[in-house]
Amino acid sequence: MLKFLKDRRALETVEAAITFPIAILVMLATINLGLVVFGQQAVQAAARHAARMGSVTQSCAACAAVTAGKEAIASAAIVQNSQVTILAPGGRVGALLKIRVSGEIPNYFGGLSSLFPGLPSDAFQVAAEATFRQEGW
Image (cartoon, rainbow, N blue to C red; front, side, top):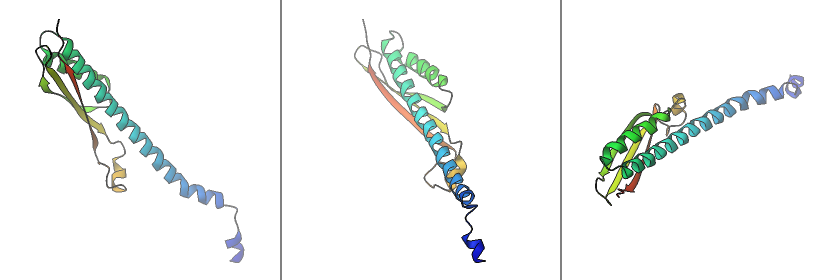
């Protein structure tokens, strides 16, 4: 029995068997975080683009902003259930046009929410707002 306990030939295999699941878990968490950050950046860019397009149009600022926001967020295919909301409609020169774009980023690793109670099991909510002044000439 003493000879078996002192034998170190398979120690590297045991260490690898212990650390490999931890390394995989860290890698999956990093990928999930990257997807959420990408989705947040996508809704921020869509909100800025929508507010800018609405602020430079001369006819219906809110209509142009919603259309531009929906097109911009659709180009970022990771954001699901997206919504474009007008918070301040603009419409006359100098008025504020405020847009909110929101959506969900799917949690591809929802099974990890049982290990980490703070993680949502289905999707992460992302939202962004942008404000521009209505231009005129």
